[in-house]
Image (cartoon, rainbow, N blue to C red):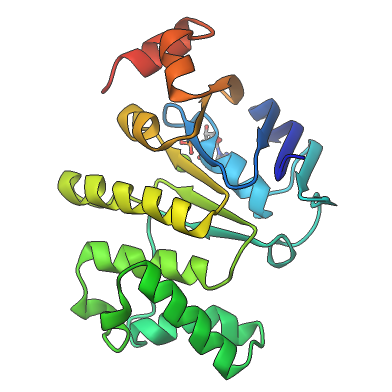
Length: 238
Ligand code: ADP
Ligand code: MG
């Protein structure tokens, strides 16, 4: 059974349709890259998945649960945004532990989770530092660490690397792929960058004007594009 199933989801803002009859299955442990031009509805799709926006129609299923209408905290999803505001006065450790404290985890459990996540992200030597003492790439890893410690059922990344320079972006992209393998995590990764999509995704979903144009492996999209939009978008790096 699919780990995450999006069925016939539509969403409008006022009279503007933003998601139109979107259906998509995400298998357990799969890294799905959602790609498409600016304004095509990528962020909105992530936001309805994690419950920051309600859908007009359709079904959202995670595991055996239908999560339509459930508050974000009950969906078991962690989202990493492009702008990752860390608490400036808190150490890396406390930044990562903060969300767990709110949810009432005990001290030993918090310590275990923070140290495990820090090890996976290679930031275990930075736990006592403050955010201002870190590089941009290190800060982004702390932001990802905050998501990992929650041990979510699903990770959502909304253009998490777009504030980094090209070299660091390439490096972090490789680390994210490793993380995906090490955690055997189910992830949806949004980007408007075709190269990023082609190198990172087990499966790529091309969105245009709120509709899924095609979902498939990078090779399938490249060799057998479903329509002219996919052919042009995948075939011509910007
Ligand atoms: P993407 O992430 O692919 O760039 P978005 O999902 O952010 O696209 O936006 C898709 C469309 O929905 C855009 O036209 C945007 O202006 C519109 N939109 C997004 N959020 C809102 C909102 N809260 N209210 C009204 N319109 C919105
Ligand atoms: Mg967006």
